[in-house]
Image 1 (cartoon, rainbow, N blue to C red):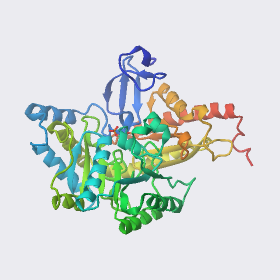
Image 2: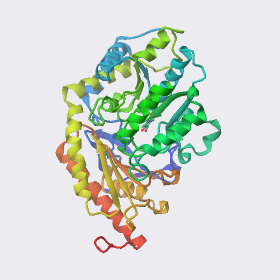
Image 3: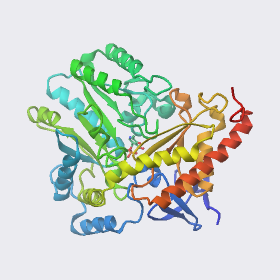
Image 4: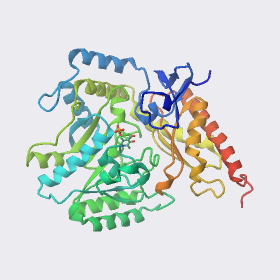
Amino acid sequence: MGALLVDSSSTSVLLPELDRRYPMIVRGEGVWLEDSAGRRYLDAMSGGSMASTLGHGRRDLVEAARVQAERLAYVHNERLTNPRQEELARELVAVAPPGFGRVRFVTGGAEANEMAVKLARSYHVERGEPSRWQVISPAQAYHGPTLETLALTGRPGLQGPLGPYLPRHLHIPPSTQRIDPSGEAALEALDRALEEAGPENVAAFFCEAITAAALPAYTPPARFWEGLDERRREHGFLVLFDEVVTGMGRTGQWFAGNATPLVPDLIATAKGLGAGYAAIGAVLCADHIYEAVAAGSRKFTLGHTWDGAPLGCAVGLAVVNVLRSEGLVEHVRERGARLREELEDALRGIELVGEVRGHGYLLGIEYVDPRDGRSFLPPELRVAGRVDDVALERGLVILSTQPTRDGYAGDQSLFAPPFTTTDDELAEMVERFADSVRQVAAEVERELGAVPAGERR
Ligand SMILES: Cc1ncc(COP(=O)(O)O)c(C=O)c1O
């Protein structure tokens, strides 16, 4: 059965891309999505954005929401707290890195990141260092669409026309294999940024411990973390982790920050906390941040209407319960390592594929120009977009990106299935994905007149 695609110019909804046609998804069950024409898709992207970590249509999560909505759906946490918020905070503290004793709830990833920046700023002001406001962060990242989070990336391609509204933050290049395999160049760039800002004005270094869509499954080399920690101690800034994607099990740890050589000061998380059943995010706060405010003004910054609402927190609690009772964090850690090998095997021999990376169920595939096996592909070939289109035709939801014009990464795909995907479903996802990449590779090699595999000197 063919897909029924919605032309974005013919709907009242302001869909993101006017030249894209969108499948109308009406139902989800496990890792399967169904469109309005009855066509089924395997969801290798956990709902498209990596939020649906536990799959679709889970009765236990729906039931948790129903029970809570009947008892108490909403109260505002500026004057009223509620048991679900208290319980969920305790659960998160129990799985956070040591020394994280407090949690603040928000309703999404960008809000969590902004809240982390606000808490970092508050920490310094409370301690009598009001000059510290500047944030330094790796350029090749995505932290959300709000004005502050857009300023945290160094990608003009993402910021578009919003530049005039964005605070001027400083950026360093990623230490990828291609640009800086040792991490030393990134540390030198960090030193230059500290110098430019004046170290006494720097509030935070902000980064993803393991990158999501912007550079799938990339993490800096050990030397970078070590050097960052040395500079944190020397200059007194904080380290903030955007774990909007990586938090709540995605990389085979409760938080990626549980396994990094450096323990951050604040962790922002979101997507997997509500698992696609509630809009909820959180900032996990190391004790010294809380204590600075407790010893100072004793007031935290303003919150949003839905922060810590019982409904979202009840879903978050049910999600934690599922992750624990089904052993999903450990499962993702163990199964993820094999999944990466399976992807590598399936993609072996395709000249377009430069690298397969992965941590848990956050896997990334980097494409290269088949003519030299190294360079970024010409952007006009639209390789990322074509992989997604072909995959969709083959009944697979995948997400590829093409940040080439920002200078640090080229065409690449994310492969991030729900944690509950069965072995058979994973095998089917890998096969559909490899078939899609093979099809695009054949077309691209023809268009480029690439020298076929085996004939290259
Ligand atoms: C790493 C990362 N940070 C932040 C965000 C923003 O989260 P939200 O869309 O919930 O605001 C995203 C969203 O894709 C993300 O991938």
